[in-house]
Image (cartoon, rainbow, N blue to C red):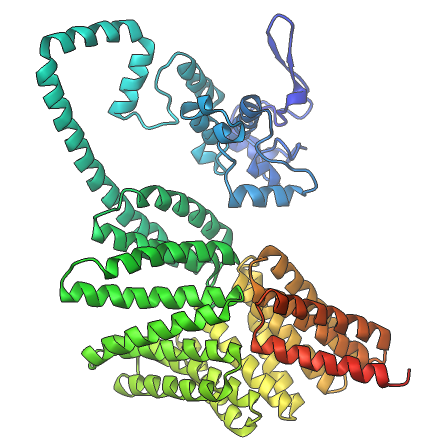
Length: 624
């Protein structure tokens, strides 16, 4: 095993002979298992090293095959498969894990590379050694097969593929035979050819239908649900989404006229959108990608609503369309389009209310209406319609209370009720009705604790409990009991820290951790501890700046950076560092004004701007 294959270690003589140089770190592998036990990890060049070498593991034959794949890619395209400039080996590895290299034919803009050469190159560059060529001989055999127009192992040996290769090797013979055949049986051949086309189309439709069911139900639903529960699973889910989107886009063109297939496609696009960037669930922080996926699903759902079908078909399609409205709404609001979000939430509520009126005894109908009341309340809150918010959130609580009364053991309804109480506590706190707000928060937290006790390994339930504790702690601080509030906030922060340690790339947990740091710092300020508040505020600001940079489409994340700057200004003011305070407040104001100019300005942003303007005005008048 060479261990450091790269262009500078390969010499081609004027006669065309290839020489391999620099065997300084190579090893003779007689027994790979024994060699692995006795050897140390050699040096390597990140630009050409295999993923296992980048992880610091002991390289074996598959590592050399990977580096040869990099050389092949470079020869085909003139560019490296991965550009390591300015990145550490771990950052290079992370990039390989998230996204496969661009097809050589696309990287070189050369259609002649498409097909076998694309497949050979990418098989050589698989992240998992088990998915690569097992030996250099196998890689060489495939390249020889390509040059000789024979089938390669990197592609499935279908009848059509083998035939294409045979024709490529024997063009003259095939042409002669074809001419004779056409001359002798032209009419019969034409008839049989048309029948074969029809048969192929039917087989293709059946095969594609089975494929999308496997994709949607196994990969995007069953497998993702299992993966999402594993610590550190976000990069794997990212790979899943990337592959699924490419596959779905190709399949969508063939779904016309098949309503069942279209429903499967819409559900798959929605699941992809959830993983990409739905704010209320574990996601990858790709708001723009989520919007694209949800809009594809919405186009399918709206067309299906107009398609003929039974009464049951129509109810199922309307129910699914309402759910798509809610998913798209939450992501539009994250992007700063609050009015469009409210419009979709209201459409979903009206549609679900009609379905409930038609089937009042079905709990799932009432549950959907209750969830829509909660969503509408969130939209109204972001637009500052406070009286309407209280009324809508009261209706959400009433719906969930009726569901829990009918089935006290239903955990989905308990979760919904806990969330509805937290949201009601939020608006009551905003209106400074602190006793009523604390009552709602405490009931919501008690319900959430009970759910976590029954499901201690559920990440989602832990995050929901943490959110309830944050609301309760914030309400206690604002109502004057900073000590009690700090205790609740500290518990919430510990929950989010554990979540972030288990999966450092999952965005929802990181976002909630940054918020908990902001609120803990606020509590420290209220208790007269500006130095403690400074440490928490600095960490929160750094985390929020990183989250916003990773997801520039998300206007809410941008506004949260401004909120962190406002906090830092308050901390500096408490330290009597007036110039530093003014600098932070001005930065916060600048960011919020940018949101306003972009028409991505919500009620919280407006109130923050008013606060900051008042602080700057008071600072200008105060003696220094």
